[in-house]
Amino acid sequence: MAKLRGPKAFQRVFDQGQTVGNRAVALFVCPQESTGEGRLAIVAGKRLGKATVRNRARRRLRAAVRALSGPWTDGQDVVVVARRATLTEPFRVLLELVADACQRAGVIVGPAGR
Figure 1 (cartoon, rainbow, N blue to C red):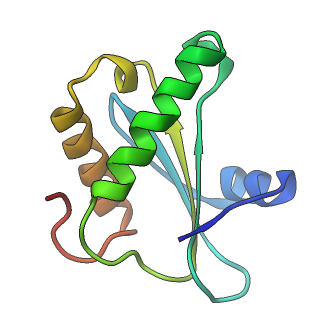
Figure 2 (figure 1 turned 135 degrees about the vertical axis):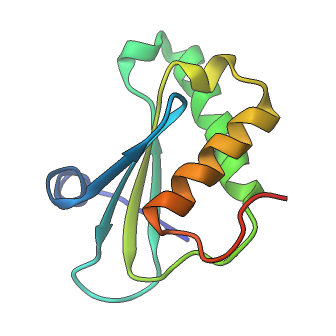
């Protein structure tokens, strides 16, 4: 997946997208205006803590998203928002939570996780 960039793209996903979440992540999914390769962004708000804590949350989510098997659906913009449990859950549990949220949002086709 390509990177989702620019404040207008983020705002469109937040305003028009569907939300799926659990204790570790919130997924915002919105169909793209022009059909193409899906775009992904991983964000962590200042609520989580200082910069080092937010960076750790983003690193863990990036690793979890990379570990998902199964093809991503094209033509969707996805924003993954870190929640507090992203930092405290064991990685195996975090991987399951991310896979579950992605399947419920419909951004991954088939079984998720390795």
